Length: 79
Image (cartoon, rainbow, N blue to C red; front, top):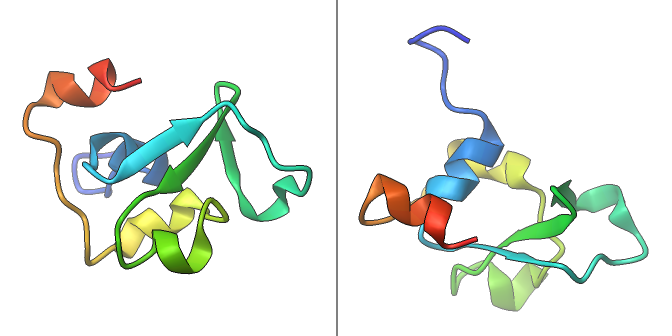
């Protein structure tokens, strides 16, 4: 990656206020993102009621609802 490349979706997910993770892994992992043994999903009120935990972080790349976590260290401490 160079300085001009966008952040990978996993990094955007970690930096977003709406990002969540759970140890509950669904049996159909095809449309989900699993990282470090956790299912990653978006808890935004416009997305979660529709897709629930069936979420792929590749959707974070062009997300119009992205809301950064208050401090950079908060993204790490939330997990």
